[in-house]
Image (cartoon, rainbow, N blue to C red; front, side, top):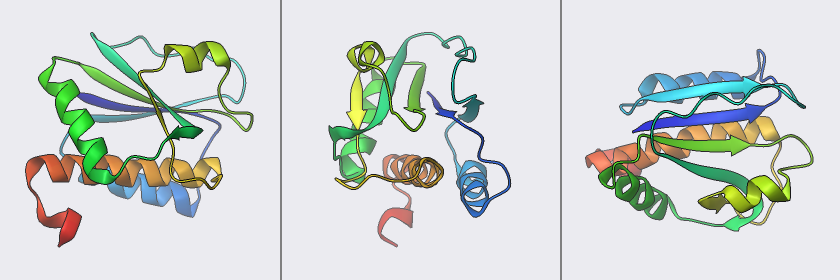
Length: 139
């Protein structure tokens, strides 16, 4: 299953970009990171059956194990792509929120978009490690 992070805004050359690149290189699952402009831009075509996860401050606060279990279940159900959408400063519109399979939050705090992207990359790496039984999660 492809783990596809689609973010609004450019990460550029930053410490957060270095973290994203570090976890992207370590991923054992197929992963793709796509940037869209703050407004507009064309959403990439889905790859087969797709699940949509919106990063949203009003979303569920899943543990790493719960996220891993969700991804494993989707994979086992034949889902080809899990899309993780990080919106612009104003978040996501109600229409997109209504289409989402999961609203995901990283706690009650509001995080900068670049940091949320790095945190998501790490959590996806951690989830794949949990599923594979790799000791990264609790080494």
